[in-house]
Image 1 (cartoon, rainbow, N blue to C red):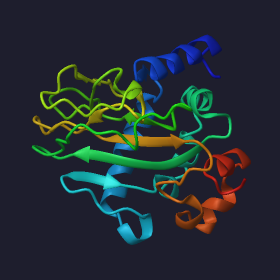
Image 2 (cartoon, rainbow, N blue to C red; image 1 turned 135 degrees about the vertical axis):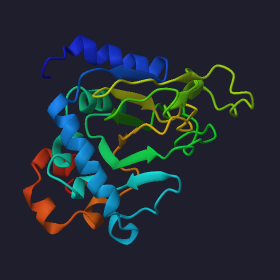
Image 3 (tube, rainbow, N blue to C red; image 1 turned 45 degrees about the vertical axis):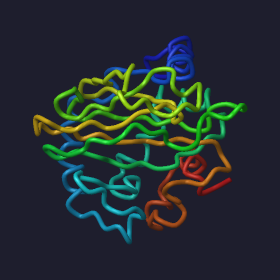
Length: 236
């Protein structure tokens, strides 16, 4: 597990299950951040909804189907400790539902609080999201806001957003959220760059947001590792 101990991984998983979120610092190096800044700008510019499976999101730079865009993304979602945390919560056979990237433009990005799916069922968490911060997120450039603990009940979002916090994350860090938590992107008031990649994991057997067998090119599928093929639900 690289430099992360099993105890740390269990603690982060416990935070995602108990509070609804956790943060892992320093997962992307300075060199990787520079690479990703240029690479994401390139994939934003060439985005094609028919080829990549989802409609463009108004008010954002956006791209889905990132695994198909660069070899870097073919292994990123398997990194420790993020994949380990997903396995602890969702099962060892969990899959990647999608790998997308969003960046709210200046004055854009404000969302209403919502859950990524239904309230958490009695059998436990069905999905989690991992938000990989490339430029850093703060209250002025559109950090995701959350209501800790709201994944444990099915109550509607409070109109006054009482209890929210902002998931302020420095460059290179990853915020992991329970998919059942009330959350929303915030407006980018400053206009500073806020490129973030979203790796969404779910239990095996549930539908994928991006069906990888359909949207990954034959060339990409041929060079994927056996583990990547399983996590992308290309192979059983």
